[in-house]
Image (cartoon, rainbow over all chains, first blue to last red; front, side, top):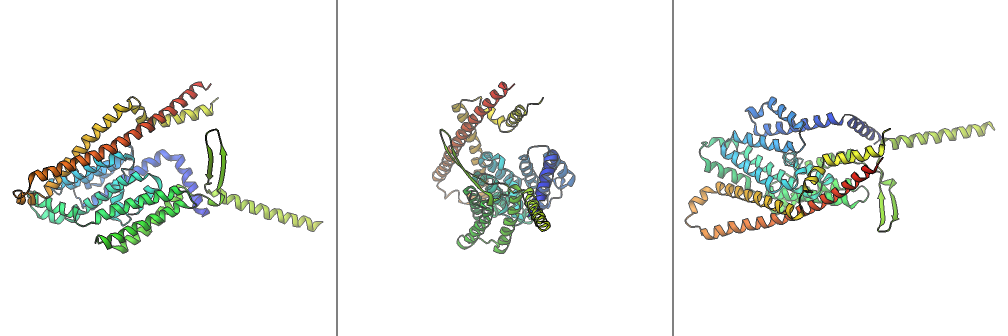
Length: 322
Length: 126
């Protein structure tokens, strides 16, 4: 525990010293990872999959606000889909535009979820993003999380039907569009996923707001459990075909990762909670103050223990001398 | 000698002006009614575009079915359904837009008031 807190303190100090450069590097790395992932999902070979182009786009995003990363990512998705045909391009562009106009404009600060969510779902960590958003944001983040989930199923529909789409003539628009739309709307997986992810955000937010001891940690675990519950419910009621083992392992990993992230965001010492009560002319205040844990707390305790041992030793020695 | 309190206030003000204050200061120029009207018109426009795009996608995806069954379809019913869907969506979105814009305007005014109080206190500092 002390080692982890020391690492956290070192990271904090390092960040506060070089925050300008670290922000730029983190933004560039995140943007590059997103663009590279999109290129790898589409198995693109054109100019949009060129590492040099991806690096330039990532460097451009590093000096722009964070919300530009999902915008540029959406442009990459539309660009890659154009290589599969103008109809695929139109479907991707229309769905992304509709998501932006209908949902994302209400929650512009949460818009990175539109690209983080498909990446997390691709790696089986679907619960991770909603748990993190529930811990740090408001329930309105559900709009961005749900949009991200739709983008995941859009990409899955396009990439899984890539060979079938290429087998058609490029002018067989009706057949290609029918295939794509049927693939997007097939099954109830998308609806069940959106409901599960929305449930996770709301439950995590509700738990962390309750303010009991270790509420943040309990919220992380509750988020993972709720996700699995919805997935099992979906499989049994609406006949979806989620891989329960994959989703279960993913949810467990999401809980562990979110707990680690939560430790770095905020670690509280619930043993030293102070409840203060006071009043002014208009209000009566009932304040619960929870101190943060720092490495210095542990160092202070050990030093105090050493001092008390030394004091006792000196006292014994002086008593013997008497 | 540097006045630490003054510097702290100036940093707070500068952070606000660079962050959410930018939008708040823009909103400040509108009366409440004007701001809400502009937001509702913007939302109506964007929601209409989205509905038309999604409808076009739906028609495109089911074009074969539509072409085969166009003769047997009750067109007035289909058009009524499309219109009802549009009115329901617009009603829902304009309600959400009205509430969220009113809340945003109220919060912005509150933050602006706090900003002006801080500006005055900075002006009075010697």
